[in-house]
Amino acid sequence: MTTVPFHKSFGPFKLGEIADIIQADISVDAREKSIFGISALNEAKAGELSFLDNPKYIHQAEQTLASAVIIHEKQQDYLPKNVIPLVVKNPYFCYAKALQLFYPLAQNENIHPTAT
Image (cartoon, rainbow, N blue to C red; front, side, top):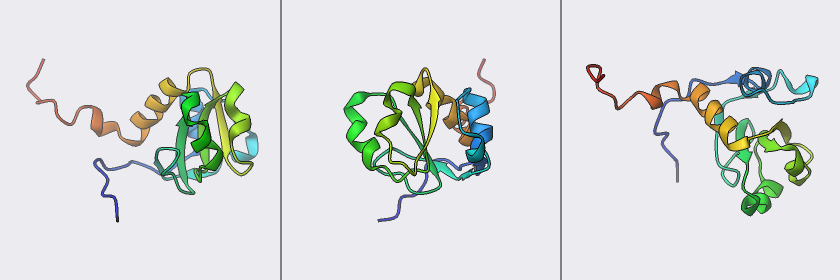
């Protein structure tokens, strides 16, 4: 079954650009990696970004196919070795900032232009 995106993504973005926006620690050699979209840990594919905040989803992090994951320092050891950690203090908040980068129109799409 093919998933139809609800909003148009403005990606791809370089991982370094995403890391700068969310103020994440990232290895220098990972900065040029292209990220094409954002998905949940259990749905992510290579080229996509995901996040882990709630320990309830550690099992999904251990098996994710995402290229990179926004994650707290204490949880980064749960990621597969091929997944790039974007280490932050507040993964959920930083995930929201990354979503705004990829889907900037989604936040204002349903607001009428005359609304104040």
